[in-house]
Length: 118
Image (cartoon, rainbow, N blue to C red; front, side, top):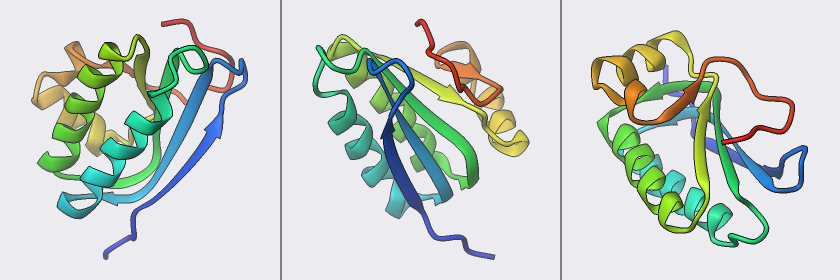
């Protein structure tokens, strides 16, 4: 069953982080939006030094979604911020592990509720 992509952006607990809460399916259509949203959130280095992409409610991710996370991580580093992917569902965590991205991206298996240090 198709679950529409949604994204909610909110400031994190510390004021120096921003959280993007992803819901639904990140596919070829949604991947560009996800990347753009991450880059907008990270664009102010003095305000956000940590960008958290929370995948707790992400039900599907294809190769374009994975590519968007890789591109986002690279660009966020260029903006002197740090990208953290949190709480991926088991099938998405497995996809990230199979592709080797669990050793490249900062992936944390639990939802982050307290301020994070990179």
